[in-house]
Image 1 (cartoon, rainbow, N blue to C red):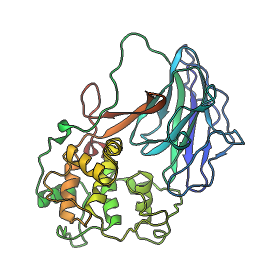
Image 2: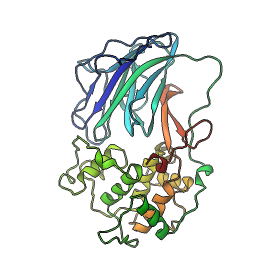
Image 3: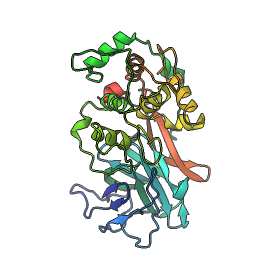
Image 4: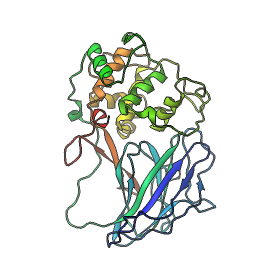
Length: 368
């Protein structure tokens, strides 16, 4: 099995994709894969029209630096094996044989939410394919292996797309005080310097980001984000590094192309959006009309709003946020497992990681 090492790196303003030279020392050769094309080590620039969303065109005049792989007649899958679980990035696939993108969207760019480490891209034709990755207004550094996989015969696999349903809603909510106690024990909601949780107080957008980042990964602050952003109101903010983490992980977008408004009180709808994005259910949201109604409906289906009286476009209390965060801890996350054809284009496949049908049970609590 011939396996190539790849690194995707994307940053705001100037994004660079490089493919590391060389193969892994323990790479084996077998009939299951077809040898990839020669590595390209020169950097490839995505372009400069980055404001809120990146644009990536793999057919660049330099034609260098794309992750390129040859798919043989006996193969039906391009497999990316990430070194760690990638969260929220954009991916496109270009077929040299067809001379066109086989992923949909602007310049073939598909949004990929929480993704599995093994990410399969199903293809229907042999030929040369180019894979491109871009970030969401922050650096994306994805490394791992790329290979082709021989087509399987015989047993068919179950369709991967799923959505939130009543099975995810079996949540018994705690009171605000009980929820806050759980979050303190989990080192998510700490309180003020005197230990007061101030459950009747409000939260800023920056404070909300930090709570959800702690819910996702209690050690997130140990990882430095080496990236610039186009937002002009966060450079001198006390939570600058935290905000960069939140942007990279797709929890938030700016209120416009230049501002994040970190010190403004967060609304109930905005807080719900951050949690639903953290759980990976963005695909459900889009089918329900997007922000804000799609997020609220998805949150209700997941059981996220149990124990919360009202959710609106006005600010929420720390107590209401505590109940929602505690509910979120036990909700199975949704992951993107790969791309397959849905009609004319390659589209994402989703899997709820609820421990059923051979899946692993993964929640925000188990990931911590």
